Length: 337
Ligand code: KG4
Image (cartoon, rainbow, N blue to C red; front, side):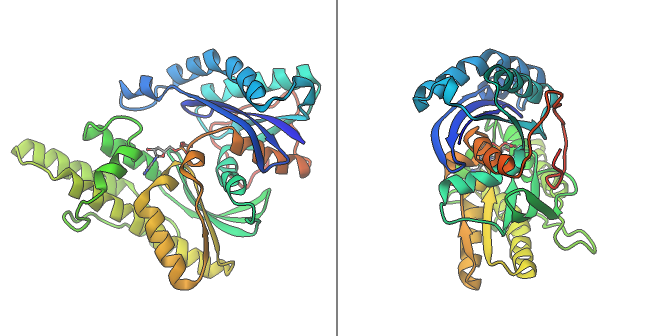
């Protein structure tokens, strides 16, 4: 089954052709991140406009690179939630018109389900059930992946997403947008104990998390130093911050793993590229004998191949959208639409 897939939930416009869920025939991405960098964060209207400009050309390019004719496409998959509403609407409207024109089913895909599915593309041996730590610019959650289309959120952030914190701190440090990658590089060789940052706990909800206090603590450290004219060691600061994020995510992941007993853990989303989090997870999984699947860096960020992959499993489950499919800015991963 060949699926033409689209992703436009934030600042990446992407199209891909995926065969039988796990084989990428093509995957093309156009990012408007450099435009948002001027403003230090995503400007929704710019993102929407850039999606409109890019999506049709990307669809043609995805088909060309895959060596597939339009007539060979069996279904169209699209991210319909969660994300920036205007950005999502571009992808949903375009995908609808393509599916209608080709006379094939339209498959709605939850963005975070797509991030989880990126692991299926990279790891042929991975099958549900498993635990997935979903960490991106908009999501930080521990998800019980019971089956390809059956999910339960075990815990998550009560405020900021982890990726959002990387981006906000990077902005104040002048490292550009998106900030996670540059912050990760800055942390290399830094002393992770040089600055003391909080690791928050949510009373009575051991798997929930909070990052806003950590973000504020780092920003206060930066502003205090600026006001006093003191020089900060940015390597140490970035390393200490990454350690605090990892110390929040990794022990909870291991606790959830113990609770579920699958001993199978995957990671998904842009923050899954973080070297400190990857290393700490690997260390703890080795310690308890759990198997860890990490997506390759190329599949951590937003792309349409992951949407085509998840779209395949949604279609097997009979999840087909009507022509009235609407985009949703927020949607629990456990909901089908
Ligand atoms: O999954 P993604 O591309 O978009 C969303 O669905 O949100 O994730 C983007 C997020 C951004 O916040 C970016 O700063 C972060 O992933 N990120 C990282 C790293 N690379 C990207 N965060 C920490 N370390 C990284 N190496």
